[in-house]
View 1 (spheres, rainbow, N blue to C red):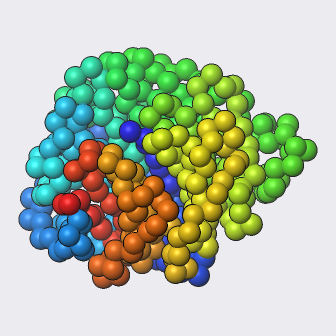
View 2 (view 1 turned 90 degrees about the horizontal axis):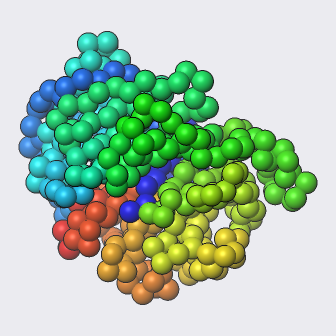
Length: 378
């Protein structure tokens, strides 16, 4: 499945909402953890649930309301067992497919008195029990026993940027790590040694191609606000200001810059399962790209988001589309995005929805701020 991560902007930016085109950058709060060790049991999450619709329920977690949930991952061979990550050093574990969650604590980080955030988590390996967590300040954690214990893997102090996305690959010890400045690294020994997949920095690429007419390239601040990875290993990244976007695929030596498809700045982008890209603007518009050979050819979707910005689009294996955004905005499409229906129950959600994740056709989750977790029950 595709991996994704949003970054840049402090927690306060999330509270602004996405109405009227206001900027809501969910993963700008990315961060991580400094320390590792054996996980200790925390308080059981006696979850109460509230129906949003016949297909989604809210799982009330035992967390502070200020926590922003950042990522979720499950064992490939055991979809009942997974972990949920968030700000304020939040780490929750489930053994029943996300119905209930228990708080976990990394003792080494607890002893040091830090209050960091986990950014990205992924499981893979030959048996599906090998996992990784990355965060900020630069940190990499590794497990070979499905999260029973974690070890810290040292990262080079000269690592460009902050690791914001980690993908565990199918072979033992293999993983791919991405930073917020576009550096992509691969390892075959669980992170002890890394090899750069991109040979030219984003800054160098933009300086070399600035005369090619990429609008807003001169305003690049050195970081991406969003990085998404397709199952095939392709990447799309949005510049922090939303002026332009860049793509990369295995075999390329540098990121390729692209002009945005709309006069409005970009909110987020991602890959579609059937190929091509989706694109959301900060004004609530949605565009689809159906041509993998021309990633600048977009068609606007008749969406009608009522001015609320769309922060993520998720694809259910059966072809159903879900678009989530500010102030509990949630839309559903069953015809490939031609027609959309608003989930009215989302209006009762006191927060923003940032990430839509489907593990399988019947197992899906939506992550938000204010400790919001929706579980698919359709």
